[in-house]
Amino acid sequence: MCLVEKKQFRVAILDLYEGVPNQGMRCIREIINQFSDFNNLEISWDEFDVRQKNEVPDLSYDIFISSGGPGSPLDSEGSEWEKVYFTWLHTIEKWNANEANIQKKYVFFICHSFQLACRHYNIGNVCQRKSTSFGVFPVHLLKDGKREIVFEEMKDPFYAVDSRDFQVIEPKHNTLHQLGATILAIEKERPHVQLERAIMAVRFNEYMIGTQFHPEADAVGMSMHLQTEDKKKTVIENYGHDKWSSMIEQLNDPDKIVYTYEHILPNFLQIAVQSLQPVEI
Image 1 (cartoon, rainbow, N blue to C red):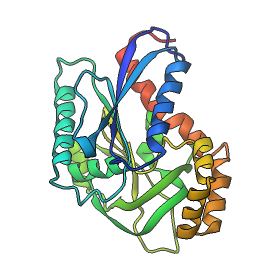
Image 2 (tube, rainbow, N blue to C red):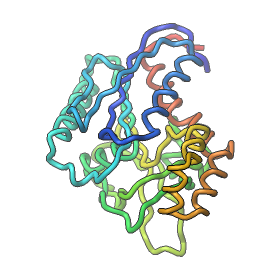
Image 3 (cartoon, one colour):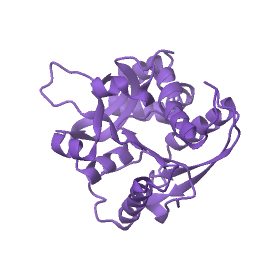
């Protein structure tokens, strides 16, 4: 589907990387730019340094993407930046709940932001993993995930980049029901490991959705990044040569990370843009 009525849209990227070098912000920018070019839309974006400068966007933006980031999603509880962040989130909720506001605000939470949102809404147990999850892994869709428009055309399972020391497990179904939230996907099945599978994607409400994995990860850029001397050395030292080789191989598979990159965040952007302009073909 190609959108035809030209209009300018404003996207706010909430940067939770705390100044740590990363690929995530570059990938988010590129997805927005590619979506804008493909659909012949004027889309501008601004970045907000949440954790270092307590920056959050105002309500002049149409769409919000909140990034991943380093560290614990638990240790920041009560911090000044987190208070600012959740005040911003409450402002978005209040806007969307107001029937007078016809055009709603759309939010996508990625990894660290997803963990914060899950803790904020108390939909599950946010806790540290026994070991780091790092690599390309299958993600399994649940019943609601198979009906989720953001996951339209995604296979079951599909593959995504995962990089985290924390997880969301033990869903609180009563809370989910009260919020009108649904779990969309869970992590790979490991029959030989007696551990609960983590929640990998949630629709929090009609306008807010998030993933534990990194849907913004691009295969070419990440492959080049992993093959730089410093990064290759770091991955091999921490995870072994087999893990490094496996990641390079899977990043180059068109049915895995390339497919995820081309669908999930672009689908989210398309849904948001369609709600903000009436004319399409």
